[in-house]
Length: 394
Image (tube, rainbow, N blue to C red; front, side, top):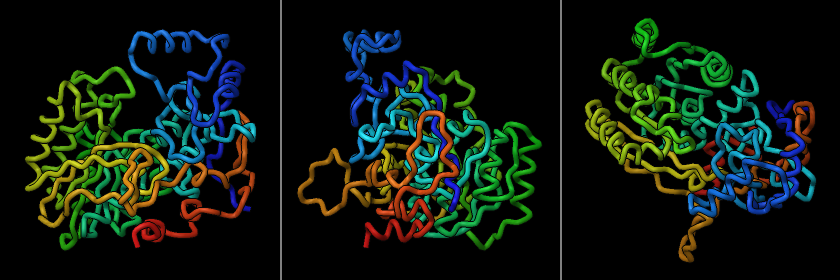
């Protein structure tokens, strides 16, 4: 019986259990009785009454027949998004497991995350869905070699490998993230801060040694997104993490790639009233003959999650097409003439995984059922990314 890696559900307090039991599928904090003793819930209600936002995903339970909301780094807590397991009738009053979150991000079951529970949560929540990266790579219209910067767990790199690209080297600051990358994407990872000259020199030396000049070179990576993200209150140009892109640009200047793929969160568009984004485009435009900005919605690309990301493509070949067309429609779009399918749902993605209690590790449990959806077949490795996507596009 194959192990189901990282199928661990976090412990919950008695208060969190009480809250989870109160929220139905598709519900949120509004379904929790006011007599539940929670200062945070009281603050949410006050904020809502003052017109400061709906907080619609707070204490949310996933709906089985819809894609998930964005999986963030706090998916182990019920109050920080829509992360409560959809199976209300089956008594799964818990947050989603690491494996369930990884599946909603399109990481296959064979992909094992390394590190502490907190580190794994961060790796999963911050990752680019590899299936989205695969479709970006396939849309470039070429195959070559990649340098993977700010690699994290390897969502971008994995997607490009699925599309036939060869990884030359990765770079990641966090050692546990690098271990995940090394075990699942590519063995050669330089661990360290690209702001340090020894790290930069090691990267450039490695690429110079093994690069094939006859093949296109693509530089992958977006600097850490926490400073840009709308998930927090700190979206300021004063955040040091926002300036790592200058080091990224320095490497672009040194490597002179044929293409680069710069990924980040949509909060980047509005940071400092759009001033940061304008500056980023100006800086990145110095390293590309043509710059394209794509706003991609994961659910439109056969991923069971509503997750929007900005992808900036720098093209020095003149061969990269415009934004990849959606292969699926959104549940929010009522277009009676569209021949596109709806995106896979949470149930499509997860219902073959064994049930868990809070705090339980289900790694030694077997699958509940045979794979019953194309997405489950893809997650189990029965079909490739190409076969899964072609199922919708042929």
